Length: 321
Ligand SMILES: CC(C)(COP(=O)(O)OP(=O)(O)OC[C@H]1O[C@@H](n2cnc3c(N)ncnc32)[C@H](O)[C@@H]1OP(=O)(O)O)[C@@H](O)C(=O)NCCC(=O)NCCS
Image (cartoon, rainbow, N blue to C red; front, side, top):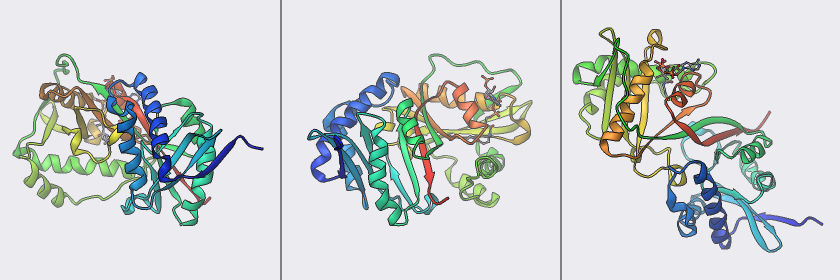
């Protein structure tokens, strides 16, 4: 007879789940002290697990060993069509004492998701090698990286041929052009993930309206006098992609950067990223967060070189073949 029982998640499991989540987060913060300390406390972890449980359409499973809950998994659909017929396991949606047991929990919970036609599965996993390996052996693969680094102590010197400054209204035509660079690049192999591609006119109109928005800072880089790239920084509070346990306190956000294709590899991406790091330090943030598609060969190499360390992996599985 098996020592483990896997059964559907119930409301009465919330507090045991919060205990497991707090323990997972304590271990995660040993590697990444910039992640928020609050959720090491079971009571605050409970707020996050409860939110995952109360999300519309949520369902999941728990593992019970000798009367004790030793693992749980919770997922819910996201309404946005960009994710397909999906379920998402958010950062607070899983914790297990034994990494291998996530496979039993998924085995039990995923049946209902797939029966409901939800075949695109997403999960945010801490950078714990054993846990990631267990998810990989459920046919998940790496899609997206969440990363953080401390703000720099002192301004970083830029090469003389590259100048960085705050963008002005006169830069709108090139800023609009650079806005199209990222979705165009993400539409190419091996990312294959373009999203909506605005027209140049729409991008210009957007900049005309937003260039003076004090909540965002925009930098442009020029190479021998010509603007070749831009970056945008803001508070991490402005990003909907970083929440709860995956949202460092008091953090700035490197939200956008693009360099025109012929000017890549000259160091402009570095100085544009560093401008946002420096602005974050001057604004009083403690750390800076960014994220990238791991299949984006450019950003996935540039941002780690700027000192960003991956905290969470978003894994993805598409069922059917
Ligand atoms: C990502 C992007 C902004 C980087 O700009 P860039 O000007 O090409 O980058 P840089 O020349 O400054 O290089 C940045 C760092 O990445 C490193 N790097 C670049 N290509 C690399 C490669 N193939 N292998 C290893 N490292 C590489 C560089 O060596 C550099 O590190 P270093 O300064 O320590 O040497 C730019 O490539 C781009 O616009 N990409 C398309 C849009 C995009 O992906 N935007 C980011 C969205 S998250």
